Length: 242
Image (cartoon, rainbow, N blue to C red; front, side, top):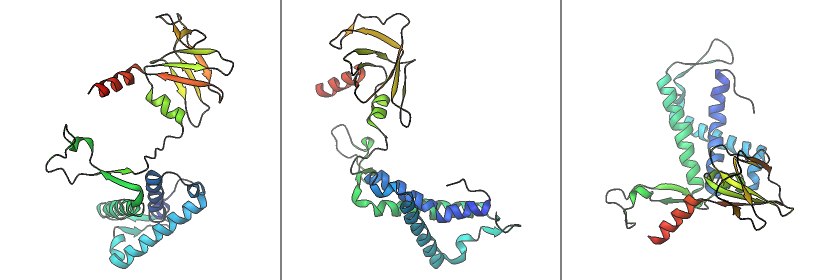
């Protein structure tokens, strides 16, 4: 789908496509990606029906008032914004807020409403006067993170990383500033800026890195990658002590 060009194309995109994109985005957030979501044609058709239905309802209820801020332009495919404030308010309410709210209602069985952490006190009780505050979450805990490798690379900065190659060799070191990983959609790879010597049992040898050594590895399906984060270990220990 190309980028809309011209005022009429932008207006058509807002009216005919934007609510559909919101419906699809909320659906993926609430229930995760389904097989139907990968059918671009079906997703676009559903979104268009949703958007056209909303616009028809708006016209029945509000009539021409909804588009009073728009006037025909000099060209056949041009639209002039005569009242920017009215147009902005109409787009925000009728083509963003209402479609988002309806999309949440459509997917309500996949949504849970929980109290955010700041509403609860030290003992877990809800603070007085804030009981109405709810934070919408996916009931299934769906994440848009495309792969486990992406998640591991994001969560394990300042950590030890050890890679067991398919031939049994161990390579590893300290993953911190200067290190780098490639993630989806690029092939999985890692650059460890501070390489350490490792023995055949996968243990770090010595207290200091190999002087001036960094190592680049392509991560293959037969490789095993281990992350050891001192920060996470300390946080888990503090949590168990509490």
